[in-house]
Length: 260
Image 1: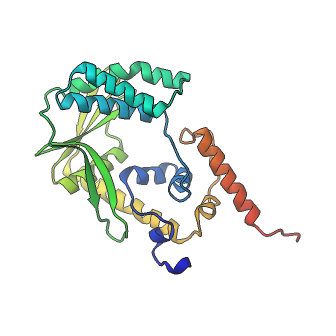
Image 2: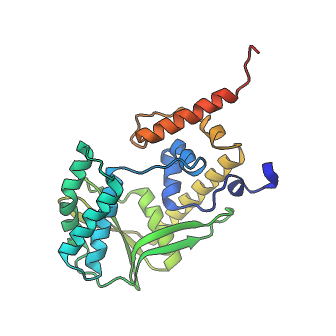
Image 3: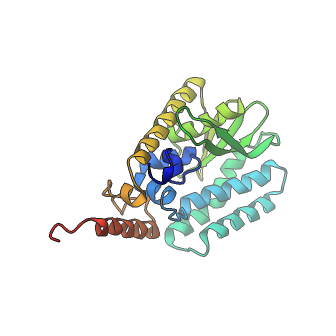
């Protein structure tokens, strides 16, 4: 490979993977290339802002702070992320924050103070030169839990969420469960050892798919040339769509003029 580097991850400046980045590679590889190979900023959106805001509030409650302090922290977390955005979608999410928190508080109401919060995980993946890094929401001495906020409670846990907590379970050596909260109800899904094993296999498979792609491209612009994305897909924010379009235009300019 170029520049005297023989490792695909090193060549492209990728120092680690994460469960969320592997999910993004499967769901929206164009966004993955833009974020991780071209360093295009992706600020997320109202759904992501809501999740972090509710998690921030629940964190305050789990560590013994008042409901008032938790709500203040939740709204502050929203404001830091939204940075003044006030479109209809954002306002719908903002208006529902306290309803989400009521359900999350009920779901976690009987829990003692956690042993760890935002607990760092780092795992080596077989055949992959960079580590898998992530952060578990809360870990107790004998179990862990991750919170997911959603407008509709799924009938079964999302496969990518299972992958995420399966990695946490391997690192911390305790079982994990997924807690889903909507504005009106909540449910908990226990992640069995069989589910963890299947999820771990998917994590490894996806990491190797990333490596295979990296081995075959010169840079992010080259990688983007392999895709014809739908820019109306929900993964694309307007700035991300413009960045990808501009990068693909650069790729076109690189091509030799067949008439020249």
